[in-house]
Image (cartoon, rainbow over all chains, first blue to last red; front, top):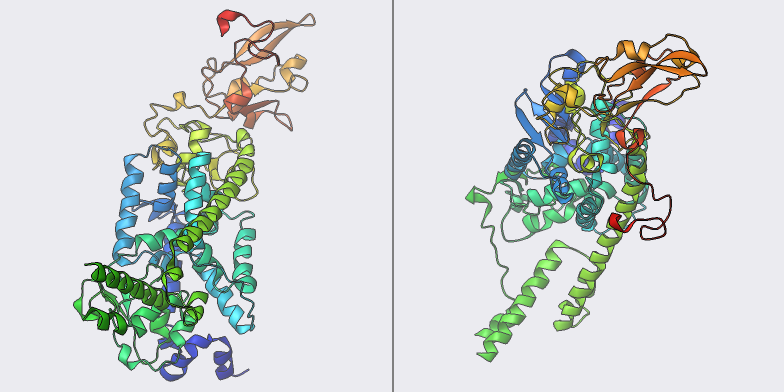
Length: 308
Length: 265
């Protein structure tokens, strides 16, 4: 098999538009950065046990960075509160630091730049596409919010941090850092779900951790912007590449702000990678060039005629 | 005034319809052109119906998770927690399974439960027969806990309560056979306080019987680790499993039934 056909076979359909016009590296620049970031975060926790040089102890649930900085997963913290645990100052500071961080850079940046399950589900999606699997059991994207509420409710009922009894995100990150045991089974189940049952099933429909970070980041400063939307050629690559395609429509096809304002957006930049005419860029809520955010759609014509 | 009010309402509906179509290309948007644009499209009944459905799903999910956890927790009764651990029923509300205690332990005693082990997923515990607690004077594991699942203010390791050693098998214990093994006594970090050798006469023979004193025993598990038998005759158990409690046993009789004194009620 020559290099070119290997290249065509392995590159995802969504990125082929930009890969063939602007080069493979261009079409995967943020994808590579995300994978590097995901590996780096895990490496920070693994350097200590492997070499004895400690940068961070603990894991994603709670950690101690450089021996001083406490960090705590806010969704776990909220469940702990629901279970009537009286928190101590350290975990409270840790949870607030994580919340402020993701409020600034976008809540679901956790999903696309940190969470190791994202690698599993992205791979499942890529394989699904390459194998031509089309079976897609439709799930409501809001299911994750109900699972999130259920996890908090179950925490209150059982007096435990409920979601941690089955959270695949924790199982995978803790498994990589501390040892996996039979946890591979759960990760395999998530992979199978995304591969055979539902398109982007776990991350975009079910995961309550993502739902929580989505709420956290719905007012975040850093947002994707369809800054150059007039250049759009309607090729559809961004919609194909995006794990939450519904978030693109208002920014790209609307007449209001160019910012992708839905909290569902993971800031993964798959749209930036896949667009060969540079429609998308990272933007900020603080900048005015993306257009007014509080946009009120024009009244329907018949209403206007009635009122005059 | 009345006219204006109606216009406002229609405008609001138009906006919400536009917004709905823009965000969710759902079955409703396909139906929208055919359905007459009237109040029924966004009726209060629909809203309440959807809300009730969603709330029902959330309640079902809550019940499912709740049952799963109750089943999963049944195994926790035997887990030995790190020193300073708060009561087991509070522990699972506090512990975030971060493993900072595991990292703080200089002897690799602690581990986080992986899937399939007999302890709540991800929580710290130790197996005394593998590596017991070495009772560091400054209790670094408890001091590393970020959530208060382990008491960071624990004054010293002597006040720790990981469990209690119990001589569970009198039939195999060598001291009960009249030998002077006493290894459990000799290795105890709180020898002569947590465990003593008591002279007893059994079947006319003088024996030295290892005797644990639960008020001093921290449950470090050194005795269990060092017991010379293939399976240890002395084992550390969580206190609710390892200790009896003085008081009256109603022996199955109802509290107000025959044999219960009125002054007890």
